[in-house]
Image (cartoon, rainbow over all chains, first blue to last red):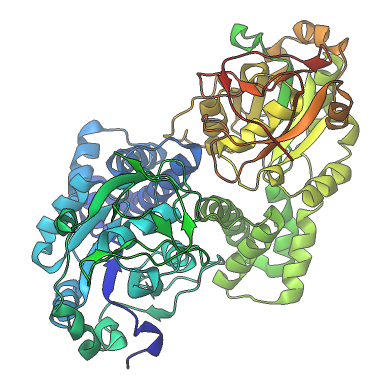
Length: 313
Length: 313
């Protein structure tokens, strides 16, 4: 049944690993390689992958997710008493061709038919995401594949969620964000997205600020929750892709460095399109930025309040 | 045997939880309260406590460590299927009177005799640290008890390690930092401290940037590693405490906001004492700031390079 709180939604943005792609699908390959330690190694690999992404972000020592994934595997194998480099390479290869969850294709297709834009927003490095999307055959079902590499910091930094706002040209409340990671769901909700937590693993909710609107077991119920008919009106306006932005008349590319909550992180210098006739501005309050471009109207609009000094690239 | 790489050290700065205080000493109390699930609850409590500190820091949603500790316990108890509020209060009380590890008092005493300054630098909220220090009878053995609450972000953010640099009036390489948490040891080493990892739990090293100089099983070997006689010369200059700073003649309080690696984090606005006769300056390079006060000389000195604009509070 459609949820009225989701009536503002124009796009669905998905976390990748654990949400669309089954990170535990590598377990079979791991089991074949190292036997009964497979479960421990796979769980430790995932745990350390997340920890290193958080710790490197806090340390101001960013490395891309492929490096983090390798480091995490090194830790997990070392803790299991196995440092074989050939085994490491075999297991890493598995990570580039993760299986999608069974319902992913049908749900993305339904959202496409209903006119909702569809994007991935992931910690993954572009090379990893490209490989996973291609391998799973999802490329025709996604408008955007967005990586944290644009901002050089990992989730749940607000700058990461800001990428989707910028790239899709939508306000946070126009985006429904889906993640199986409870901490990611919390971070996205705290940022201002409409959030559905895909609790695939029956986890206890995290005690963090930012509450998801819904909790689902899989993605199957998502189209019904959004209400298919309501999305259709956006289909007629087309789905602006990243490559459409340069064609907006009267705009220029800038690097922005601001102090609002969604983009104050020092590593984030967002590349934005703004009107050449007016300064770049942000909506104050609620901890979220609104881009200056109104994609539907095809020209820059100013929604707000606090002025910053744009610096041409 | 003394390590030449530690010859610059003038102060020892200790992590608190897991390094000086035994966080697993609550296990007996937990076992008494909930039986055979005690081990799982205690480990999950600690894991979530750390995770929430990292995640809240990245989300720009700081809460103090007492709140984080309560939230983490709520998660752990809920995951164990026990939401009894009375049990929660009982277990939280245990956290305010953690047992120190057996060698802590004797090592701190030896360092005091040898003239090394001794401080705690902890995620803990001041109220927690005060309770733990008092309960363990360590108050006469410490010059400073420093909390991340000064900067509103948790370890391993560089701003946290910068607190010790500021408060002790020492350069990073003059500080020996000790932690049982491998990720904390890595963060502190990456910041520029001389780091000894107290690997109490026989952990595998983390695959993070920042390498500790030494790995010890307990703190027992620390005085020998530093070389007792060499520390003695600092004893004659006294150990300036936090309360000494306001008495420095010709200085003023400022809020600094810089972009060097150790203090660029947006939440950090350090309160510093600087000379009123010259601008606040920082040493460039090596990712570390050097405070403008030379504690030994009792008056401000300027060690370097890059100028920022101080803003009076």
